[in-house]
Image (cartoon, rainbow, N blue to C red; front, side, top):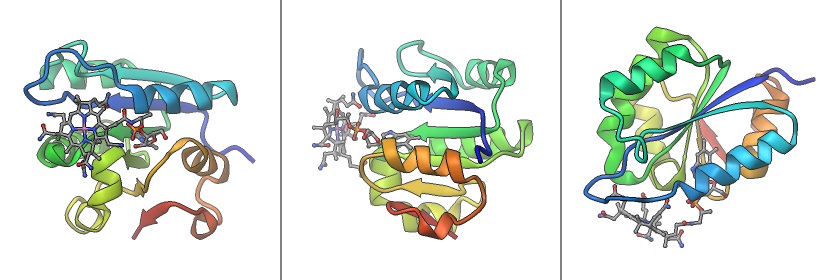
Length: 146
Ligand code: B12
């Protein structure tokens, strides 16, 4: 049974870099779209979103789960973002890319709003979460959770 339908994917702004296409998150978006999920992608980097603009975009979106892509140097931003998202809607927050892969212990220990981290490639793993919802989470390979 599919527990989630509307997926919000967020690329956090990279630091000190002009133009970067968020390739990893685009892979995730394309993959779950193929599986007929509705996907909204907010690219905070390409669109040069301020924090306020980021929250404005999130408030306008329809979603029942959020996936965030960030590298280790954006820990603070993700901590802020996860907190704000939960104030807007109390839905599961999944973090992938270098931050989720390399720092999942720290993330889960210090950011209570982060529910899952994806370790490594995320296509199949994220789809598994979407399909299983809250059941049998422990059987999904490649995730960390509390
Ligand atoms: C190309 C590259 C860059 C490019 C662009 C990256 C991009 N478009 O995202 C540039 C040059 C901009 C870059 C910059 C940096 N990079 Co870099 N980069 C890489 C490199 C070589 C390849 C990344 C890539 O495109 N992979 C292909 C795509 C398809 O895969 P992906 O992005 O990993 O995404 C997959 C998974 O991560 C996951 N995933 C990603 N996002 C999400 C989100 C969700 C919700 C889910 C479920 C899954 C998920 O699923 C995706 C598909 O399978 C990697 C090393 C490597 N071989 O992976 C380092 C790497 C990712 N970079 C790294 C670092 C440290 C940086 C910098 C922080 C360096 C710095 N000090 O400035 C900066 C970060 C940007 C910034 N300054 O803010 C580290 C990350 C370490 C960490 N723990 O975060 C890596 C692993 C290199 C290393 N071994 O040190 N980088």
